[in-house]
Image (cartoon, rainbow over all chains, first blue to last red; front, side):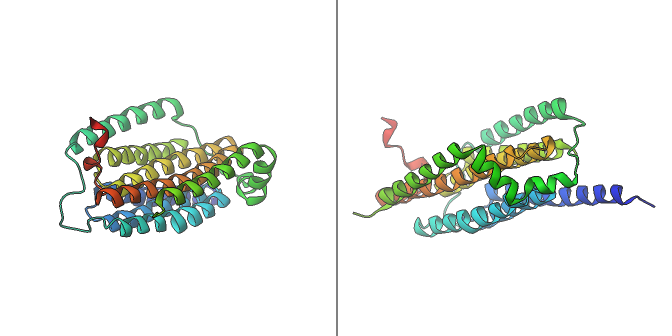
Amino acid sequence: MITPVLGAAVAQNVAFYLLAAAMAVSAIGVVRSQNVVHAALFLVVVLAGAAGLYILVAAEFVAWVQVLIYIGAIVILFLFGIMLTRAPMRGTGSLDNTQKWAAAAVSLFLFGVVTALLVDAYGGKEIKLKDSLVVLGNSNTVGTSIFRDYLVPFEVVSMLLLAALVGAVVIARRD
Amino acid sequence: MGLNQFLILSAFLFCTGIYGVLARKNAVLVLMSIELMLNAVNINLVAFSAFRGTVSGQVFALFVITIAAAEVGVGLAIVLLIYRNERTSDLDEVDQLKG
């Protein structure tokens, strides 16, 4: 007979590893798929998995922003980019350049170094799931923090979005 | 849940993104790999926010998401401009600055 607390911890771990496996496989798919549209769809799985992870640590507002902005807006922008540049769908040459083995060596080396560092620095540290995390992740707390502690960065980001909008229109305009 | 579960998954996504940036030829796919890397950073920020019990990490994650949206908008505009002038989105063929 397992206690409810232990049962919840097991369920969280199972959910985490399911999401992590799906995200890892899809991330490989994003960088290895030979079809550009498939790569964009794999990216959707990775981003949705990240939203699931945020839900798992009770960061619900960030999770829904992730779904709305990343999956709803950015992936659609990517699909527009694919269509407008007539990216090769299949068969017309490889999508990889000649240095892919060097790239694989670099990324594997970096992964090994970072993993060793993380195990050394944060091994055994636990995220304690408690009720206060739910309060921490809701839109009330996040909004209060943005408009009280991070008001100046928030205004700077809004100006940056305006500049990016104008810049994108100026760059892509046909004149 | 261990903190390292999140951090190592995020490191894996980041390194996958680095592989994509280095090994892909198509400009749109390079931008997708950059999104993978930004997303890995977001997972780290939210995991540390839950670990420390403060909201700052989540606010930073929201800022990163906003910057990512701006970056994709400008990046795709540049890719479109290159495609219009060169009739290609293959980064190996955009080498006018090579001298």
